[in-house]
Amino acid sequence: DGEIYFFEDFEEAETERRDYQIHNLKVDLSSLLNKADPSAIDDFLDKYYPHTPYRNKNTVKALCFSTVTTLQLLLAERNMDMSELFEDSDIIWQKLNRFETIQDTYHWLKNILTATIEFVSSTENTNKNDIVDSIKTYIDKNYKDIQSLNQIASELYISAGYARNVGLTPGSGRSPGG
Image 1 (cartoon, rainbow, N blue to C red):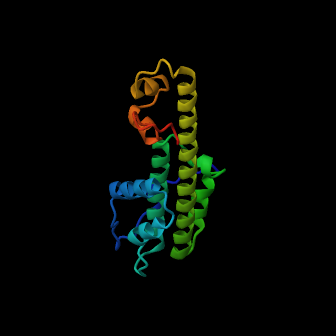
Image 2: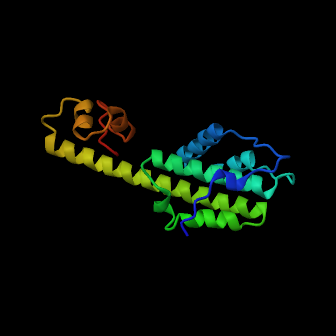
């Protein structure tokens, strides 16, 4: 319990090289989270986890380690945490260390990606609905004094661009969320 796993714990075989860049992995994972499309997971996995027999277990585990660590970073950038998704996030690393086959790690990672996409999508939709409710309440209370979209955004500590993204556009005749 409470063990820390370092990248060195997952050293690759000398005959294999890492054929991915962490930056590209982050960009692709970010895109996957933004799309919120679970069917895109297979494309991601096919790109990074080709079904080739030359992969050894340690190389695949290192890639899983990089993927999950990058997911944690992306969640942190969204003010979210892996512990919100998995009750005991240490179990992720414990399970990864126990896998015996590459296929096991592939399915494990697919499940983590699916759960993460669903969590992010659900959380962001809830946050968006909360903002829409706040905008509606502000408009209801202050409709006579509102001069601009920027004023509403400023009062609610959000950007005007975000207010537009949640459905409030000046002169459109549309109310927030509607």
